[in-house]
Length: 149
Image 1 (tube, rainbow, N blue to C red):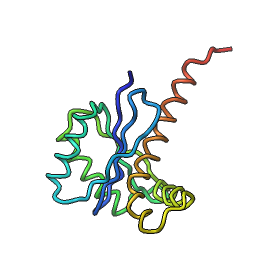
Image 2: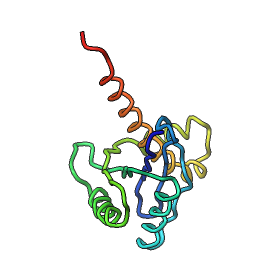
Image 3: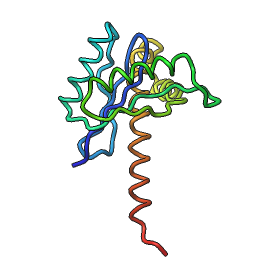
């Protein structure tokens, strides 16, 4: 059994969440957190880490298209520092450029109305962030297990 990973699409009003399955192959969306107070948000995330036996947390880092920091990526960095102090597992920043764009496109293709898309986009962005990381890990495992010629 592989360690579970929790992914967070951080926002000032909401946080999208996804967790990996027990095999570490697929990302499943969790209910989106409506942000309240930072202490409550951190406690909710700590309880999810405990509930799902999470061993790593990924937080989407909204860096600019040019690769530079944005005002939002600064907020994310501050949040990650608080999260690291609260959680018993590693917390990593992961480039999330275009995950929200991809999430909106996917939801639009599914035929969801604008209102339903707005409610689902944070969770979908977290799922995409986590799934891309799980795919990366799988590719790395496969690359390491190939026989050398």
